[in-house]
Amino acid sequence: MAKLQCMAKITAVTEIAEGIFSMWLLVPEIASQAVSGQFISLYCENKDTLLPRPISLCEINREEGTLRIVFRVVGAGTLEFSQKNAGEEIRVLGPLGNGFPVSECQTGKKAVLIGGGIGIPPLLQLSKEIPGEVTVVLGYRNADTFLLQELEKAAQRVVVATEDGSIGTKGNVIDAIRGEKIQGDVIYSCGPTPMLRGVKAWGLEENVPAWLSLEEKMACGIGACLACVCQSTDVDNHSKVHNKRICKDGPVFLSTEIEL
Image 1 (tube, rainbow, N blue to C red):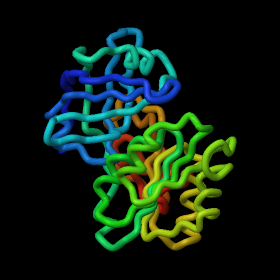
Image 2 (cartoon, rainbow, N blue to C red; image 1 turned 90 degrees about the horizontal axis):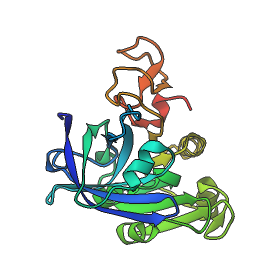
Image 3 (spheres, rainbow, N blue to C red; image 1 turned 180 degrees about the vertical axis):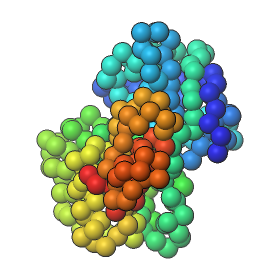
Image 4 (tube, helix red, strand yellow; image 1 turned 45 degrees about the vertical axis):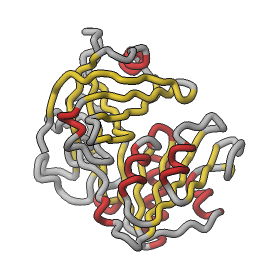
């Protein structure tokens, strides 16, 4: 799969929750080969903002040649992206990383997709690609949700947890999973490390394989700089130590391959 750096035309930018933006990009060269779980790097026009910003893919429309990203404004780079308008162009690099192994969930198997915060967007495309029964478990801070209705249309079942208890189970995604007695044959998850640590433990407890997409700040995004590494259970062929590059070897890993 070839990585391409090119100009993408912005077709829509919308704020879908407080500080959360959805952006559609017309970029057929990347959309034609992208898969769920991968990400793209976006470059800022502001030259003081040197490094590109990695953002996961929320939706992929290969027929129309478009990609959708959903991101939270957390700094100068994402603020610049949120202020873009339809018709403008932005430089992107992608597709990057490896995606979710959809083949692990054949027809007849039950998949549990678990997302927290800005780790929720990648689950939308994934939920559309899995052939079997899909249960999605989502963790939000409060009732200011995003992508909830779209995921409810894409999956057979959606369960919500909120930190303040305003919607669904009060607590985290593991509290919701135990409270709703959710079971599955394979787990896919994306979100903050504490959540992924809980998902890994639950998967081991249930003897169910769990594929985790890690969130990490990145520099090059292509595996050259070793700025975004996680500890692995085996020795990495590239660095010769117990490290894996999240941008290159990931961001999706089998939970037993990494230490959290």
